[in-house]
Image (cartoon, rainbow, N blue to C red; front, side, top):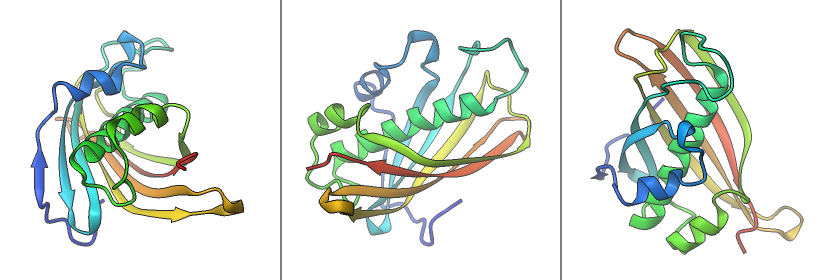
Length: 177
């Protein structure tokens, strides 16, 4: 799950002012992300380690474990926080010119999950689990003359009882002109 050189250069504890703002678009009962520590990695990449709790699924009766829909929602929250904190601290390659105001403007309409894959190995307790995500690459492209950023990510979730799910995603940041 780790990048080639994972020696973090700087660490940032949960930003108690930033976290609620990042989660503001979510309905109260769908705010799963509780804490998030961001690390700056070599090469202008970043990683987040997070804790989550899902008291009750927002769409289905209790399955007794973390499911694919909740994995995706938790990924979104972790990713949004990682990008926002990276922008705030000037950490992530490709986003050097962004301000937090740019992030708020782009958060919902312009950050797309282009591809997303999950691999469940053991059930995870959705009421108390942890996750991590890292940016593996960020590259500027201009298909059809419209600039965008494409980012590859990897993530993993687990719990105290050995539950495990991992995966990867590709993000497209569009309308960045």
